[in-house]
Image (cartoon, rainbow, N blue to C red; front, side):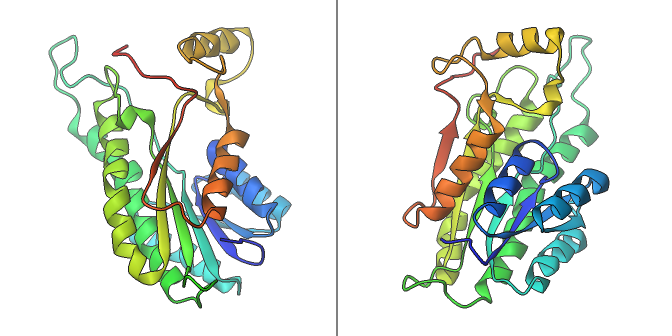
Length: 257
């Protein structure tokens, strides 16, 4: 799929993996629609890249519909949806104090990470289905979802997060089969330990990141957001990639702790 002259929506596009992806796709000639809750950062990035910012809560239907409509309103065919919005949470199913996992927190993680991903995928794909085919294969677009290796090898205290990311992995193939009828491909990336601003900076942050990346076989470091963005672009551009879950983790396999 060639994104030059097309529109692409990136949820969580104001920072981290989403920001790197927005920059990468804008570099292909795409008009990027940054869908994020952070208005200040999102608007500044959209202005820099010549794109559009839409304040978006991915778990809210009307909010996502507005983001998709903004993409359509650019006048360019919507060809890519990248789901990178998400939140983390750490809590044991039963805590050391004997208290059960907070149910509201569990629901919140599922609502944002899993339902939010499905929400943008379904509404975005419906908009793609209305476009003219881009090639002889009748391709109309690509959805890239972001899960995590935690959805495969969840660690202690990750029950909510792992359930949300495992759900994204689980819906990849059926969604790809559903959307084949309208010429939309679906792929999921499972990042491992990626260096983003969430870890902070300075000596203490560097020491913590070194500890996190120690189990990575090769290369012996955290992944870079720019490398994630490069993979997103490669998957979009490779027209025979569909229905796949791709690990992006330097070969790491999570242990319980």
